[in-house]
Picture 1 (cartoon, rainbow, N blue to C red):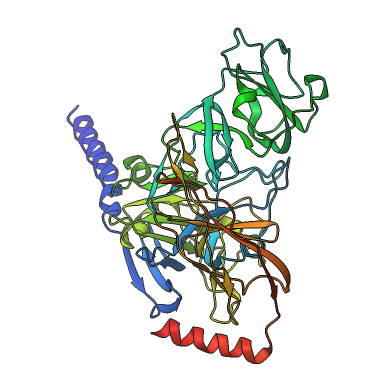
Picture 2: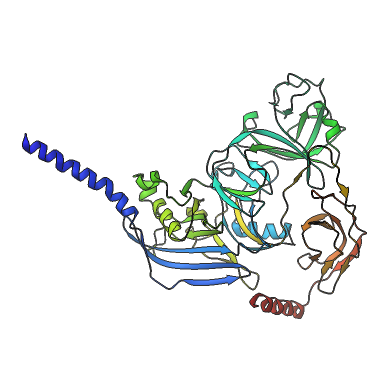
Length: 518
């Protein structure tokens, strides 16, 4: 009997020692440099590459890159990007998305970026988590953790709460005229005051109520085109269309007085309403919060899941420091030549803690993990070693960009008593293709129209250097804010953007280098 009791106490002691050994190891994360870190800088961004030995459950080598930017530079922003086709999801490489972004936004310069969320790689290509791009919620039906970029240049990580579908009516000045939660989706409304939305796969529509038919620019579903799978729809009203004209590229908005709200030039959006997300410019979903408010979740430390503790892979991670500054980390993995296996989830968490993260989220990894940064000559360099041997196409990316990005839409409620701004005057383009114009009192942003495209700027000068050679009609109007309504267009300026000679390009690069080094 005594032997049994002694044995029992020994077993209890062993269990106690083993259970606490995890906590001891958790506190004993050790990272040692194998080589001196390599530092690179370009125009407000910094990249540090480190080759280290990590000791946690075991010793292993790790090579990782940290990419960050000057968070105090108000010209630098983080945006999300995708290359989705209308009426579909899709994928592209990080490099492809960078060039697509710059082509669509010639007034902005991409400084670097990383891959974003996990995605349905074998089927639809849709992102796994909530995805917001330019304030539009393209995917909202997900409860996975999400990294958020807000309009006030702050960042946070959390799990979104979906409140339902909403209808937004936005005028061509990017002002929200109407924003209401949907009452019925493909189901008959019970009164004229209920807001109903209907698509081709509707069950029934009582067309005795006020309605408008929207010619869709885009409609996206999670998978099948059922009412429970709608993610996003966008389009413009066509007052000549009737309910009988409804097809797969049209939808109906029904509520009393809707024809008095919408005009021909307005954009109508149906999207998920997420609690507290009105000012979120961009997101990227992830699968695991690694650090929350300075603490590594205990369930992550205590986990004995193989995929958390043992499995080591390339990873992409976003970290937010306690001061609010942001940085990205991508580590190499599956690299037998350098004996770098990658990181486990626990190693990720402790590495990010070591690097100063107060909050951190694991994004898509493996063959998707990609980090790129701009070189001085304008080309982009892949900073990590791609585990697939080439760049994988992904669903979403996060980009660091310089310039004026699109502002949050203004929500005008109640009676609009704002005065209309006066239109800008004295438009002029100098020899270096820089458009200038006079400022307008109380104006904070301007809309520059170049040909058929519009661009926002907070400055009274606007570079045309990135535009393709050709003749353009250029005009400017003041963008409305809470102090005033959007102005009329300025007088049109016709201007020929000429191709720069080799000497002019070299001179511009030389001046840019001097300015960057000051």
